[in-house]
Amino acid sequence: MLATRPEKQNRVRQICKEHNAKPSALIEILHQVQDETGFLPKDALVDIADALNISRADIYGVVTFYHDFRQAPLAGIDLKICRAEACQAVGSQNLAEHAKANNHPFTDAYCLGNCALGPAVMIDKKLYGRVDADRLDQLLKQKGE
Ligand code: FES
Image 1 (cartoon, rainbow, N blue to C red):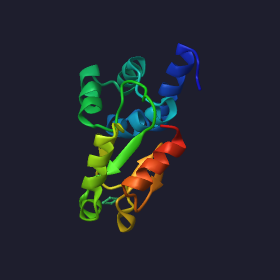
Image 2 (image 1 turned 135 degrees about the vertical axis):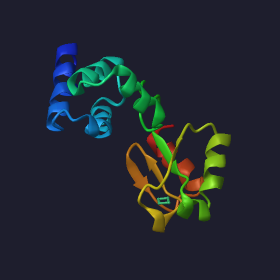
Image 3 (image 1 turned 90 degrees about the vertical axis):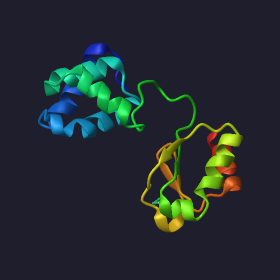
Image 4 (image 1 turned 90 degrees about the horizontal axis):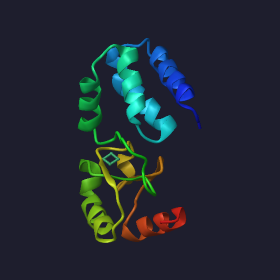
């Protein structure tokens, strides 16, 4: 993990350079920065805006529009529950209701690419299939929640 502001700034600039500083690559750049830092710090958004020569308002617009982007570190486990059609057809609604009822914070995902094995969830970037309420509880318990 990068410690100092100049190191972080250099890494963000490097990521932008890898994408030829194209504004059309903004979403990929934001994902890469978030993957490396865990969230999108305000300083990084300013650095990206400068590197791509776009306004800060444009960046904030994208970051706030897509629920996958985080402007603060995640507290605890990153749980995503697929709410797309194939998973809905095999019980992801019940799974989401179970998660809510048990105070498991989660975000909705719209297809995790595991449609044949729904309901699908992703926990800290690891994909799981055929997850029912009991299995979700087990997986979260293993992760320490
Ligand atoms: S619909 Fe859930 S993984 Fe594709």
